[in-house]
Structures are given as structure tokens and as C-alpha cells.
Length: 313
Image (cartoon, rainbow, N blue to C red; front, top):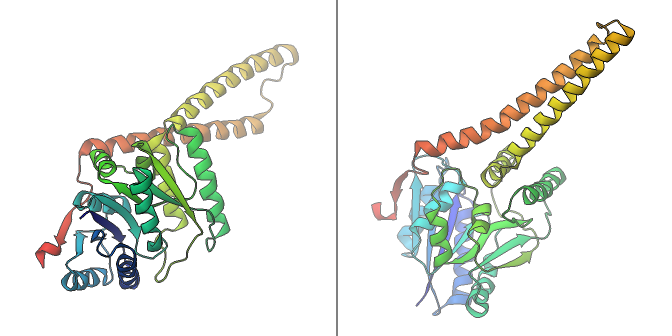
């Protein structure tokens, strides 16, 4: 009998986790009973509440439940990788504990892979109901921007929630880069993919861990991980300003020879100086981002550290 591995990254999800487990069990019994085996892999990403205690309780009560607990918070990307590496199923899905990823879609995803011979089935939100308008606006702008910059297409509204075959997962695990941006990695590996659309669902409990600043940093991670266009832009802007400076120098020389008074225009000169300095610092910042990524990669630090699992119970 084939097995489905359900991977759930958790950070302070003590309220949501029991609700997720109950809903997932309802779906399993309704849609997969006597057809497919299941395993639940809950990854505790350094939670500060009682998430780990909930995981341990579920693992003792249900042999299908496994858990991985990190030594500290390493981030969702690391938690997803840990789950993928631990999964034993023939098909693997990534889900959030807050039930914003509807478990009821899992049966349709499974049937699509089996009957239509897809390698992975992803999900995307067609609405952003419940999100602040400013966040929705910047999210849409991010996808437009990165798709213009990168050779890897990323679908607007795409969620991490997807069902993948073992072959797809093995391909993702092979990419052991430290700076991970899973939405890009899922697209980078290719394979035949189908997208299922659904309307946004609000959290059943708890609060979102993604502030605007964290999402902004995550967007920068994605751009620097899958595009070198910012480096090209900084080079082009630098060349453009060199040309403008040369023309201005010629203009000043001609003006001085014809009209005299070479010292006029100090206020405008200072403004231009500050503007050009800002462009230089901005370009240095872009280069610094790529150097920082390289620095982290060459240190070869572990992406995550496991403190305990269900085997330690």
C-alpha cells in the first residue's frame, strides 16, 4: 500500500495543531481509508509555547505521528527541508498547521497525480481575503518583479501546500543550498505540474508569524536566490551616471569659457552629490547581499540541528 507523508512546519502552534490533526484524520478516514497509508511529520521550529508537548502527546497516542524538534528556531525553510528529508512516503505534501491549506483538497491532488500522471500538484490562492491591502499589493508586485528578473517562473498566489512524488522530493533534497527559497526551488526542479485554485482561508487559531518586514526580507531572499539582475541593474546605473557626469563636465567647461563664473550652482551640485552617493551605496548594498549569501554558503554550516524526535520518547 502506498504511503502519503504529511509535513507540517510549526512555530508556536499549540492552539492550531490539535485542530489540524483532527481535520486531517477526518479527511484521511473519509477519503483514504483502506486505500493509502499516512504518516504525519510535525517539525517544531524552536517554538516557545507548548507546541512540542502537543506533538509528543499526539505521537504517544497515534503511531502515524512523528515529530522533529529543532535546537532553536531555524526558520520555515529549514523546517520544510527537515520534513522532506525525514519523509518515507511515496507521495509527500507540505501543509501549514493553521488550516489555511485545506486538507480536503488532498484527495483531489492525489487523484490528479495518479490519474493524470502529474509529478506534483500545487495550490494557489485566487483571492487574498483577510489580508491587509498593502500586503496584498506588495505580494502581487513581488511576483511580477521576480518573474521579469528570473528565468524560473513563480506563480502568483502559490502556496507551499503541494503534493509531490518521491522523485520530485529527491530532486529538491539534492539541492543542499543554505539560502533556501522553496517557492523557487519547486519551480526550478521542473517536472509536470498542475495548479489547483482556491479562495483564501483565514487561520483557525493563533496569529500569523509573517510580519510585513519578514515578508520583505523573504522577498529579497527570493530575488537574490534566483536572479542576478540586480547586479546588472547596478552596473547599468553606474555606467549611466558615468556618462552623465562626463557630459556635465563638458557642459561646465564650455559654460566657464563662454560665460565665466565657474563657482555658481553649489546647492544643485550638493544635491547631485548626495543623489549619486545614494546610488553608489544602493549598488554596494546589492553587491553586499550577494557577497553575504556567498559567505553563508561557503561556511557549510548545517541548515538545521535536531534536538529530539519521536524515537527519543
